[in-house]
Length: 312
Image 1: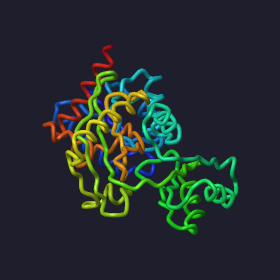
Image 2: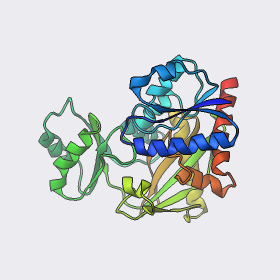
Image 3: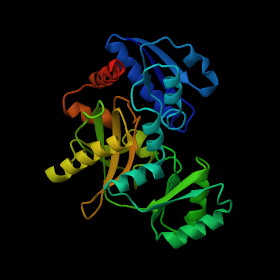
Image 4: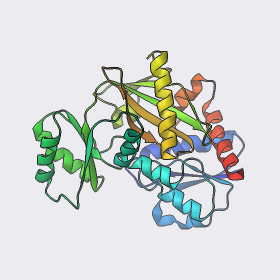
């Protein structure tokens, strides 16, 4: 097939997206596809408007890539693409909205509250409300951002206002939630809608206090244990909840669902990633390798699933 790969983008995750795109492009070429690579930017929409391809593979992360905007453009142009559609992408990117959906359907989430810049111009006013609503430690982060950009684990009162300012640099809405300590795990999900399966659960052991940007992307920043050594019951529960979360948002083809296992052995969902990192050393390919799928095979699997969707 003739496949365009959109990667790069303009979000804070651009460098990660460049690596994802590079891996996807090589895998597609290895599988014999004719690849058109596009370092995407909204300023060069002509490249998208004039595309003549069988399929678009999205290697973008963060805003203007993972949030449904590019998906909407491709829908209007009637160009099929790999992954979730507009609504699922937008819902997954909006952490507060997706948490409401999960909580309403019996999946545990951390207590949280949002603050809009337009409603609260005074950072001290926001800080005062946070103090009355949460007890230390808690998390302050942008409502729509990836790779833990703009996130602060607030352990002291003096961190609150700087954390608010940093989160608002990335988004007009900030999300504050209880800090949940425990084991960090993630579950890849793959399949056409209604026929999804969870791949082996991965435990992430970051070298830093939590799975921050450096832990994710710096060499040696974290250790991945696949499959996670958590016992059969927890594995089955996480797998079921990951598929449930994927379906609740209406995701398609693939996603990766992040959880914390707390000291009570409860599984608390963090978020769903509709376009998770897809470099050859990323979490999703690590899990796929355990069941015998090479990186190239995984990318081809996504292409085949998307092509089947196109024919339905």
